[in-house]
Image 1: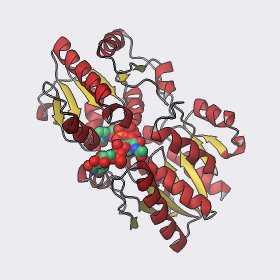
Image 2 (image 1 turned 135 degrees about the vertical axis):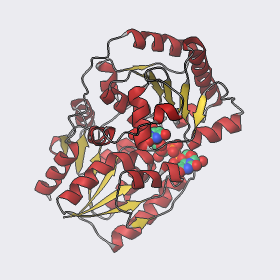
Image 3 (image 1 turned 180 degrees about the vertical axis):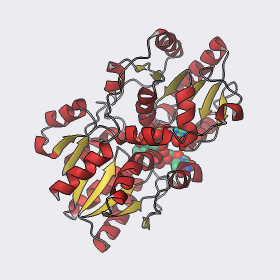
Image 4 (image 1 turned 90 degrees about the horizontal axis):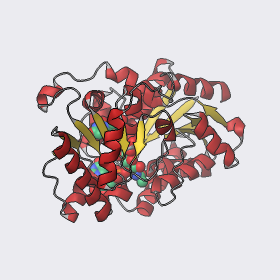
Length: 356
Ligand code: UD1
Ligand code: UDP
């Protein structure tokens, strides 16, 4: 069995890492195709170094562009390397343009596709990620659904149940492995105390590319900083940094820092009083490390986190954000993590092994 791992962005590197370790451990032949969708050091290479991942065999360097052009470049460049170096299966993870591009290129060449984190649905088709998820799922031969909820979404869309495997999410494997490595000295570095700061992560296109929504979120964050009188730490995604500059949105009053490494971010998540985010992976991680979470969106494709009461979807209205923070801080933090017990990567490799 020869496996090609296709990835391109920060969350894909983090969530594919456990599968890469498992393939390596079992001496299965694999290689990485990096689309280059993310390329800044602190969005890309920092994770390869910290997680000690093998260098990509192919670096396609597609870079940033509009949706169609970026996806088009990804398809074109992946197709070339798949023809040259035909794997038995490609693995894609999540819902980015790299996932969609990889799935389309492989499908047209008749190469098997495994979709890790299949079946998530926000039911909001204005999100580019929702289109990517649906199309990638419908191209795939192995759909690794994290939960029964995601399995049901796929079945409802008519996907053959035999192709769907409920495996949990590799983010649990990743958190389990890396929380131990979590970076000490971080609280001193940022001059903060355990459970006495908020952590923020906002980058979603529908939030930060929309001036009104972005302004409203920032207003909410500033109100929280004022009300609770504790720091709001915001490692800012390059998209958000660019858009805040473009819209002239002042971030004064928030502790804005550059995107940080994974061990540090996990540590900040674990020790935060509460996390405010629109990130997918961060909603899951908070649920795993037992830090309450507010999702600054109108919907989530991770409803399991809301069902277990680890997360509230607040929208972007400042007053509602504050209300949700108050509510969440009063609630018990005794939920169970719905994404598995950390052996997802092992299950995925077992399934590929016995079916190929
Ligand atoms: C992408 C994914 C999103 C995922 C996110 C993870 C799609 C449609 N979106 O969004 O689902 O949650 O990655 O972080 O695939 N930029 C840099 N350096 C980089 C990468 C990006 O400066 O290394 C800046 C560029 O100005 C670029 C912008 O960020 O135009 C957006 O990057 P892009 O990859 O298009 O989308 P993300 O917002 O990162
Ligand atoms: N993350 C990180 N450093 C940061 C911000 C986030 O390592 O400064 C990690 C975080 O722990 C999670 C992942 O990046 O595992 C989430 O990525 P992102 O929010 O970019 O994408 P999404 O999950 O929304 O697709």
